[in-house]
Length: 184
Image (cartoon, rainbow, N blue to C red; front, side):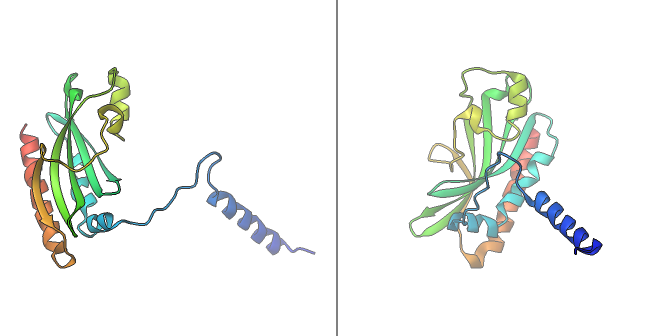
């Protein structure tokens, strides 16, 4: 015969199992192992370095992110911004820290790219909500690292022994970018 204490334990166990269950229809999130690129970005705190930018209120800009991205040949953390006003959506500025191989070494680069608006139509209300979480919908871009036509603000070969110096250099470069960005 079950005691009141046994019933209480059973009830608590059932409640625990219910709270741990995924909502109906939600797929289980796959946890992918970190790539060497992602590990390098983690070690220099790239995400945290950019996280302060969208929290600021800029006079002429709307800023969003950060977001971690990855592909087979690179990984990055990006924030994105567009000018305030009705026509500000036409060009998006992407600022990011990317890690990619150059020969056998991982190179960390802080860069900036401009993306033209590429969606067939523009609806200000929908855009305003959607751009906060993802820029890919409207700008047809994967967030790849800057290329030859784009601008790198800082580049350095990653090494574990230099990671603290890299972290500091990135912070200083982002602060300078923020001052320039705030100015106009």
